[in-house]
Length: 147
Image 1: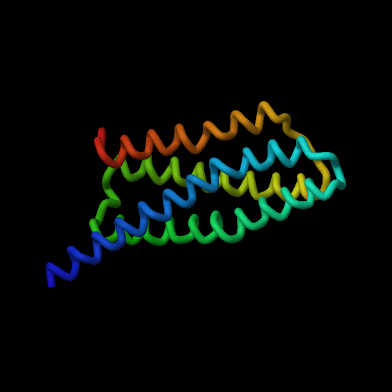
Image 2: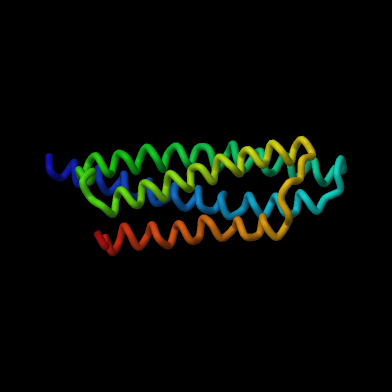
């Protein structure tokens, strides 16, 4: 029985890491897509192409990834009974923040599709730094477990 639990843990962990990579890749790509979208002329075929690309990235990569990341991450925490660990609380707070960031990007996609361009290219380029910083801190929390 211990072997089965051990293998289950390894599969949960592998799946969690794989889908974190997919999710992070999408979070890096979407703001860059927005920059190119905003540089396209309003109402142009190029703008329509960017709207479609953003929609596909959100629906095909980002949405399934965030769901699987949360499900497998919570399953790992449950399997290892990590609920009292301080580093896990900090990680969950950061992942919750990234989830909010994901939601903000999805909402901005809808604004762009309606022709509302409220952010500058520079602001969107800075948004690319958010998932990278969060990922670095999360990896440190999980590997080093400072508290």
